[in-house]
Length: 257
Length: 379
Ligand SMILES: Nc1ncnc2c1ncn2[C@@H]1O[C@H](COP(=O)(O)OP(=O)(O)OP(=O)(O)O)[C@@H](O)[C@H]1O
Ligand SMILES: [Mg+2]
Image (cartoon, rainbow over all chains, first blue to last red; front, side, top):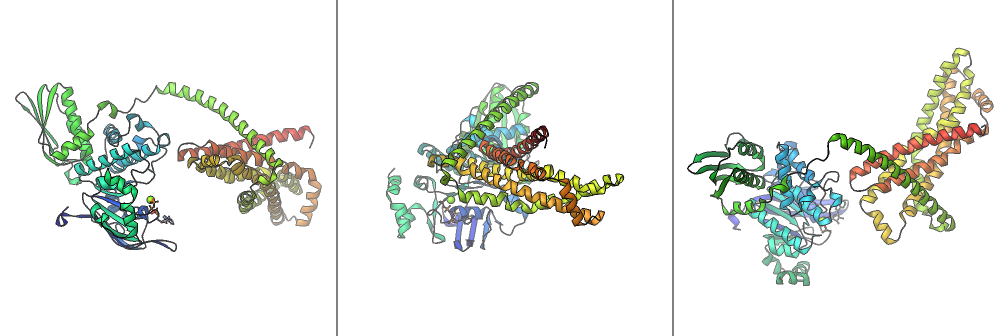
């Protein structure tokens, strides 16, 4: 993407997160451009999930500013925040479906909250989302506890996509999916991104996803975004962890494929 | 974005030679979906050739794409051949994504009529109640067997867990149980004195208080509070562990959940409930004595002498002996209901309610049996 054409949909500046004495992020800066798929990588426990939770407002940072879709989410009042929430969708690391609702009802929750749709149309759209994420029709009427882990993930994505958001936050979307399913998931995200101009903020360890669909990658290490850029930039890095990550045996396998 | 609603017409149709021309205009997005859906529902059905012009679309999302497919399907069902023109390539991708068999978008029919469901529900609950009773008895058996194994191998007792649970269910419950028993004593003394005063027999308020608190109220109040406080906690704790597969994990490691989770709780309550009952008895009498002193001018010394005549040691023990039985009941029901949790977070709530209701019910039923038994043996 040409630099002058980019518009930042998420801007994070000087972010600091801390739990007790443990500092997770310090002086973290990050930009996400409209329409891109940004992959966030980093070792376990480097604070990828915490970063995502902070951006969507589930965790209040100690310092820094966060701007999403032109709104200062930390300072905005309730109504403005509510309006922004309608424009993003979040898929949590373990799906986080409402366990007392069926999959279709789960997908209808954000639609009921934010839109006034006739029941029949809402049910149709919910079932369409079930189809979109590649779940079989009968999954729509099942409860989350009756689904496999990978199916729960897909159902979580369907809920995240319920309002056709402008940004989706995905926390390890392909973890726990079979390789065929994971590839289909990648393709779906790519298709949606191209067709809808979706911006995707994706925490992932899946090297195949990184190669296949991420326009840009941000590496979280040493409490901040250490490097960012397309995969070619990653391959040139000399930082030992990044080298190991992108040149290890798994990475070579993914690259070779 | 919302300003677009109402101002724009999303769907225009015009008859043309050999069929119909339809133009989709504006933003076909989920926020406008209700209006668009209503507009396409009003389209007359034509035969011949229908042309769908997507050139005027300013935005399209999956809901909008679905509505386009729906409109095409409607026209086709009316006997028209549909042609789509003017779609941008990215819209084509989207339309392809959302195209699917119409049948899978319809929710399944809601099932049989309500009367059948109602009658079926009665039958189902009856059968369930039977199964519940059978399973509960099975669980009691399991606990007893595990307990017996523990007697043979006492070192397997989880001492830390036992002590922790005694603190939780016993020590930490003292303030609330003490306060409530004290107040019950106050109320009993006051109400009793009021009635007895009509016969000039105020002094017998001590008998009333001594017998009712020691025999029934102390242990019953304590059990009910403990059922609400600890029985529910047992269910919720074990239930959430069950939900997160912690219990399954224990089994695979070779730990017996009954030994690790249930026994410490049962034993803790068996130890704690009699102690709490004793405490409640004392506090109830204390409340009564204070009330008698302040409003009846019955000095504590006189209260004690009268109490000594009114109650015998067995009055006290008749109350206390029920405590371990109630403790078993509450703890076993609490743990059993926790083990029954499955599926959803809602199930934890349902089982917790069921646990409190069932244990209080059983405590009162067992208390009634005790009364019958004691009157038969003449106590
Ligand atoms: N609520 C919390 N309280 C205290 N510490 C927390 C909390 N949430 C996260 N942490 C800590 O923050 C750090 C980052 O956690 P995070 O979940 O973001 O890791 P992650 O990068 O997503 O790892 P993974 O790849 O394993 O998912 C961890 O060290 C964790 O212990
Ligand atoms: Mg994480």
